[in-house]
Length: 145
Image: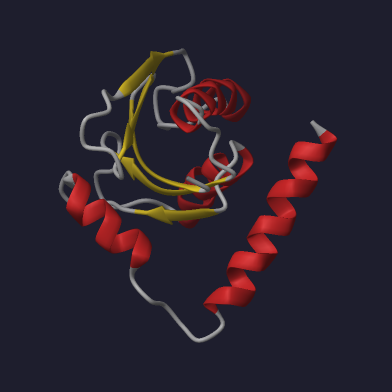
């Protein structure tokens, strides 16, 4: 399979990655110190290393997936909503960890069907152009790494 659909839940110093396209897959969890007293992502680099390791594990059980589309869901420290800077940090965290497409979700916890619906919903007409741009960016980032 060339595409993986992942659901990423972010709590204070904890990230959980679930393969939404495979209900039998067990969630992958990692604990790392990346939160600060005020911010869920206080240390971007530490969170990036943690998420990248989890996404790599989730993408390569048998045949590695080339693309990952993810829903990233902050579950703590969101009282009063997220600031635009926090939203951008979460989206960039997913993209730099290898996601070709990242959607930020701040509502209730989603089940696998809801994650798939959010990731496969048709968007604007230029969705292909956005996807292609994200794909090229992802390839360039992997090449540099």
